[in-house]
Amino acid sequence: MPTTLENPREYQEIFHWAETQKDATIPSFGVRKNDPYEYQPGFNNLFESEAVPGTIPQGQNSPRCVRFGLYAEQMTASAFVAPRHLNKKAWLYRARPAVAHQGFTELPDNADTESNFLPINPRVHVSPTQLAWLPFDIPTDGEIDFVSGLKTIAGSGDPTLREGLAVHTFLANTSMKRRATVNSDGDYLIVPQQGSLDIQTEFGMLFVQPGEICVIQRGQRFKVNLPDGPTRGYILEIWGSNFELPELGPLGANGLANARDFLHPIAKYEIDVAHWEIIYKLGGKLFKSTQQHSPFDVVAWHGNYVPYKYDLTKFVNVGSISVDHIDPSIFCVLTARSRDPTAPLADFLIFSPRWDVASHTYRPPYYHRNAASELMGLIYGEYAGRSDEFQPGGVSFECGFVPHGVAYEEFKAASAAPPPEMQISKGAVAFMMESSRPFTITEWAWTSGKKHEHEPKMWDNLVDNFSKHKDEVDAILAKAAQKKMNISNGH
Image 1 (cartoon, rainbow, N blue to C red):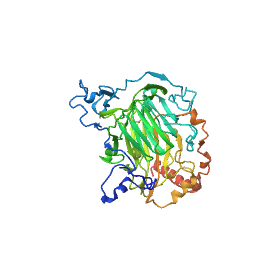
Image 2 (tube, rainbow, N blue to C red; image 1 turned 135 degrees about the horizontal axis):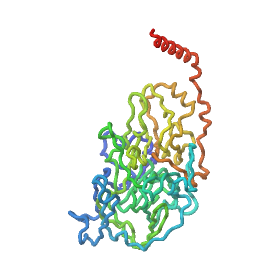
Image 3 (tube, rainbow, N blue to C red; image 1 turned 45 degrees about the vertical axis):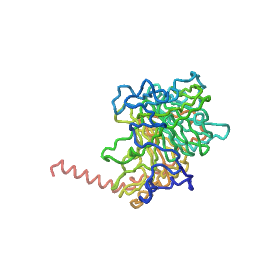
């Protein structure tokens, strides 16, 4: 049975999930103490689950008669002839198939969401400026659920092109009642920042707390309840791809996010003869269908196209143990392919508690320009290297090849500091949603009162130390020139 946490910050204050195992003095466990559900572990496995034993047909998928008069329904998320390791599907055995509904009605556009990020869209903005947003306010007036509280910050492409992505925030103060939603455009990677999400899916239940993430894939219906009250968080939505674990290369078999730490629901059905509303998102537009029964009437299922969650405190950080920084790809939890085999559509990276031991190395991020668009958020704690305005629930953004780095004071201090041997990011988890594609900013985010710019004056006092060594440099150059002249004269 789940227990109430005496310290709500219990899992935010640990250095790593390993601390919960108490050096093997207690029976090991894989979920947080206040998580009410059971799960199946593994990433991209073939799973099966039945709420009533003996329901799933054996030896075939679609028999003439399914036990208990259930209907067989297949959800196929890839081309039928996709290679076996990329073939995504699930078979569901349910009281009524999803086709049993009363048609679709187009809903008014939500002015705060966006799906077309092409620059010809007047509702999006292109800017090289380093932008940031203070935490967005959770509404207090009226009842705003997960669907109604969706706001888009930035993105690239268009879902009808089947390649692109969007970054949203959700700001909700009430649970979804007899209302479910389905994203027909792409996959949602959901990152709660304040308040837990009790998510009901066709495959079963997921309890997702700040410090955890979940992925609800394209076409999967779900409903979000708010057991802790008002909630805020982030969503990375991808089109035309699915999230995968990054390859480990020379790391070998283990490290980063391990496959066995991803948790999938077990079947749990709901028979509810009542009026339900299903909100479909297609091409960025919203449509509504109604039906007189619960969409969560799945008694059993099997397949590999299943929603899942992951606890970020289980991430196994790797890094340099001699000198220099390793590229930030070592912080990648999940990645999604693009049509360019050398550059992903999207990466989800985290910066969590870890040891920093590099010798003779400048500790902060070096000054850099890179091709990726970077959108960063903070789940909890404080993140070094950012201003005081980078707060949990906020966002910062840098587009490709815009230079960034710390102010001179921090550079000077870090250059003079002894080699670090310390734990960093204690009590904090920050994330980055990164893409090879250029982002445009939505009208909602562009005009938000929470928006501010990284103050460029912070770099005005970057000292030209090189010029202070002019005499020394001139002497070296003169000596080198004389040596070159002597060699050319045969001396």
